[in-house]
Each structure stands twice: as structure tokens, then as C-alpha cells.
Length: 112
Length: 109
Image 1 (tube, each protein chain N blue to C red):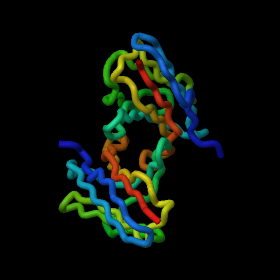
Image 2 (image 1 turned 135 degrees about the vertical axis):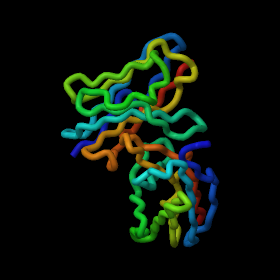
Image 3 (image 1 turned 180 degrees about the vertical axis):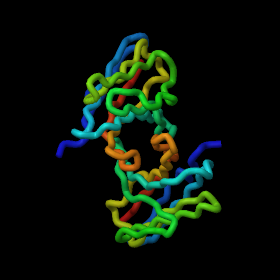
């Protein structure tokens, strides 16, 4: 069975540009999560989808971040416009039940 | 105060050593606890869940002390392949995972 996949694996963009990250969860998993690790800090929660609905978006840093999960399958996370402090590794995770979350390999975002 | 606190290390130990990691959490209402392992530039992977009665999986033993809000992981007979960052993780009542900063283990030959 395929695991959680994320695209791209790396992205280098300039400050002010837009970037869209994609996550494909494990097939059949209704729960999809986005997390982020900024250098030197712990991994932090961004938001949680149940199917196509946002269950919890309390971790989204500001309105430059927009997450969608149309149709309840894959999800996108768009950062517009990107700032230097957005650099980090963005992880997606999916699960059937909340306590068993499977992580994707992450997207390493560098904003210059 | 961070919700989950860990000693970042690094812990440098020889092969065959026993090493213990500790973690404290701030929310006394937390119900589910885990240790994840993260290799360099990889995603976190679930190592084991932590139960009040303590649980063991081969060379790994996890313990939970609810009164002290303290979680531990013991690794016996360390292998080179155990070198990684070990993340203490608490599940919130809303379903999100709350991570500690991680403890780095380096096992030397």
C-alpha cells in the first residue's frame, strides 16, 4: 500500500513569490494533517482536515497560508506571498484514527 | 513553557550501552502518548505508544507517570542503527500531535 506522498520534495523561492505544496494521503484516510518544522524548533501543527472539512486550523500562522482539500482526497497548502520565516520542512500526515498518524516525507521549503 | 519538553542531547553512547530519554508534558488532561523516531532529513515514524502500565517492544521500553506528567524511553543494547532523533509526542484532545523538540542519539562503534 502506498504511503503518504508529498510534492515537491524541495522548493526554493524568493520572498514575495507563491508556492503550493501538495499532499496525497493514504487511500481511505479521512484525516489529513499539515505540520511544519522550522529550523531549530519542534514540529508544530498547522491544521487538520476531516474529509474536505477543516476540523482545526488553529496552527495556521497567518492569512498568507491557505489549505484546501477539495473532494476529500489530496490537499494543497499555498503560501502567498512567501516570507523568509516560512522556510522549513512541511509535513503532511494522514490517519484513520487520530492516534495513528502516518507522515509523508515532507517538503523542504527555502525562501530567499 | 513548552507543552512537551525534552533534553535535546546529543547523547553519545557506545554500542551495547543502555540509554534513557525523558520527557515532560504540561497538560494534565492528555490521554495518549507516543515516541516517534526521526532519521536525518526523513519523516517522523511511530516507534511505540506509551501506556500507563509501561510497555516493551524488544530492546525498547516506554513508561508513563501521569502523576509527574513524565514519559520515558529506555533503549537497551544500543545498535548503530538506533542513531536518530527521538521525539516525545502527546495527542491533544482535538486530535493534533504535540511534539517535543527531540533528543538526538548517536551510537558509536
